Length: 491
Ligand code: CS2
Image 1: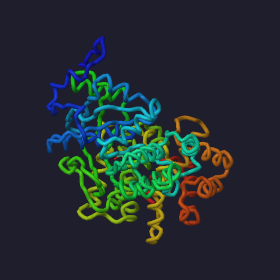
Image 2: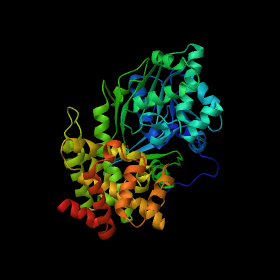
Image 3: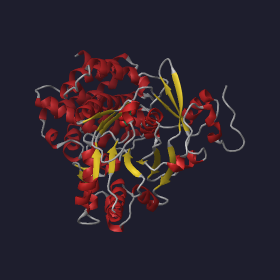
């Protein structure tokens, strides 16, 4: 039975004794992690690793979350003393745990200065980041100084973008003589630590000519590969978890039991014993990053565009269609896995089987629309670089091209009918290319490849890839996405 909402606000902290978690004294921790982008993913991933590390090592690392723009998560969690539950749900089991290591949440749009101060405080030892692909404000792995938000930050001397916050905070740390900060990117970008380092140092050049060198001497940036399927926290999620827990938790999260965190071992100071929570600390993350980005995220994006064209709401619905499942298995087996070096100890067939199983978990419903978001920034690392690597090996990226064609038809469909919403920072540019080539699929593909800024240079002149893309864009229009996929997997 659904629990009744009490008349007054839920005091989640009072329910703490119901959970077998450590008692805590939030204010005393003198080693803090500042997490920028405290959304559902980070609260069900990095926060859980820190929680488990604290429990196993008897440490008291705490997290100060930062939302750069919206106060929503802070408003919800503040009412319950920043405690929340996570329900891990497989097809057969559920496991509930309470997270107690989140100390506070700061909101940049309300008070940027306190965010900068927090990162520049002695107790901050680590900064972790999940701001999604667009939060890096990068172009070709360097700061995009033509990005309007970056330009505004440079002009105003204030911080609204992630690189600006970090550069200002590092300048403060250098003025105070405080070194020793490790900054960890946890977003789905290849070489995420390197990109982060570049954008922060590029921004720093605008503040102080010596800051770049100071950063080199005092700050370490770690690349990581993060993996866990965590849907956005919706009313439905809150209801499902609240029902299982037996009290209302407005900060509740639902996710799969699977989790992985591979971290580049490049720390300047102390850190939680994350390895006790299952994290892998390695010298080079890149092989793990590429594997996960291409196999899991590449398939996820492919399913999201196919599913949107089919009118499915959820990933698990789309992947449960046998033809889509076969398509995704082939995409991973014949193309994505062939484009990369598989890390030692990983059996790629088992890895891909597990991915399909994870996607079919209907108890963790993940919207196609959520994965489809920001396609112009996701496609390169998920699909297009794999196509380039396949071509270098003399292999044909046929199913990759079909996945990219599904993205194109998804954008065209939106333009024609607005039957579903599309969210992408480059939507205006993409839409004008589509509008200018409305009646000509050949010209549409050529223009998107040449002008959209989505296709890496090496692919722009690839006539074979262009032909495959044209064929699939036409096929999807004439026969529908289901038949186009069927033809690709049986043909
Ligand atoms: C998804 C990822 O929304 C998306 O784009 O592909 O968030 C995915 O669920 C995670 O990377 C899984 O680790």
